Each structure stands twice: as C-alpha cells, then as structure tokens.
Length: 139
Image (tube, rainbow, N blue to C red; front, side, top):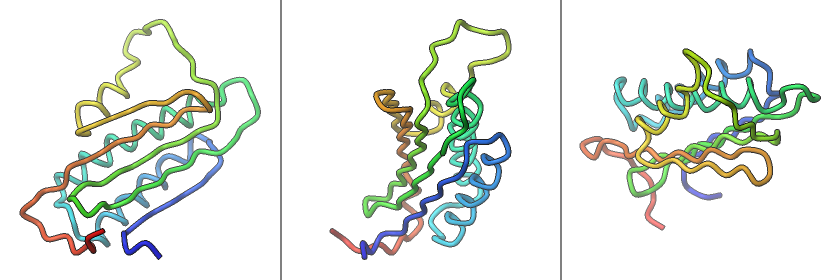
C-alpha cells in the first residue's frame, strides 16, 4: 500500500470512453478534497484533451486497443496524471480549426511531457493550491 491517493482506469479507446474517464477524475479530485471547483475544471479540461487525442487518433485505421489513465496525488502538493495509448503517433499537417488540444494541455498543466516510443504517453503535472490542506503522508 502506497499511502497516496491513486486512480487507474483502462478502457477500450473508443470515442465514448473519454467522458466517463474524465468524470472519474472529477470524482477522484472531489473525494480527495484537494482542489476547488476552478482548479478542478482546469485539470479536467487538460485531461479531457489528452484523452480525446488518445481515443480519436491513437488507433486510426487499426484494431482498437486500450487507453489508460493514471492519476496520483503526490505529497508535494502536486497531481500527476498520465494518459497512455499503444497506438502509433501521427505527425499531421495543420488543419483549420483543429490541433489545439496539446496547446490547451500545455497552457493548463505546470509541466507536460510526451513520449512516443511505445505508443503515446502524456505526463501532466498540476500544482495544487497551497492554501488547501492535503493530508498525504511524507515519504
């Protein structure tokens, strides 16, 4: 047992998967009691964009596979959220009105890394408000 609050969800990467996964993150944040509604809305926007990218693009033209979300509250007032797929990363030419998802994620999260070696792994770090008490054990 880690002593840290964690959430892990695996689902088939279908377009209808992103919404309930995002709702699960909302419930996780509410249950943990560590963010206000404004911060939660921002986090959910970023997570929703990362999930939408995974379910929309990861397995285009191939058999469907899994999308995984892993969220973890850290003891330094941060929330780490990872979105994984096992698809092939596609570099696309710009399309009018499209391509804003990762820019939104990067504008909201304090740190974002994307690894495309074995599928796509989006790692997001969110700093949580310091004026709220988070009761996590120290390492």
